[in-house]
Image: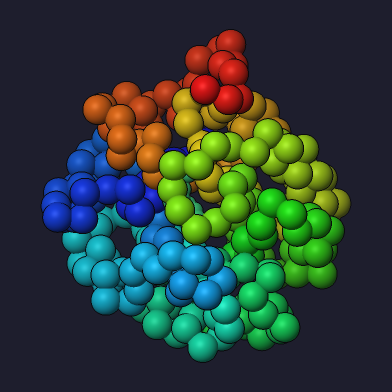
Length: 222
Ligand code: DX5
Ligand code: ZN
């Protein structure tokens, strides 16, 4: 299991230190939540902050674009991302976005909201390196995990296996040590954690328990 640190909830006044801290604590990648105030209500940050993170980080960066018309913005994130993920709900032409990302030497991923059928991804799965399953409605950190996401991850895993895709499954939203075991069982490869990590007093301990969760899964709701 890999853990990706979503910096949306970190202390932006000490961004460099926060990045070094999660790297030292055992994170596998850094997750950048780009919001445009249109696809989602809020605005978070864009390319300048992503580029600054890239200068500070040793770990690979995964850019999660929560923006409409991603084809207009993808190029901004290619220079410093290992993976660029766009939302299937935001474009008429996912194939073109995938090609644009791949042409930049970057791995393409698609994300989908909790109410978008998993089957919508079917045509694109063979071309993807990652699928990012939203387990909350995107827009902000600190929300409650939607338990139905577990079945969606299982369905996605079957589809991925069925078409021979190499796509990993990332899960984003309300991820915490208490549901990490269920997510691993369902087929998640990368757990993206924001508030559960940055609001915890001990990054190393939180990352370790996301990777090796307690044997008895805790309640899905707090
Ligand atoms: C939500 C973002 C997530 C968010 C996760 O719109 O895509 O990456 O930061 O935060 P938590 O882990 O607090 O749900
Ligand atoms: Zn995200």
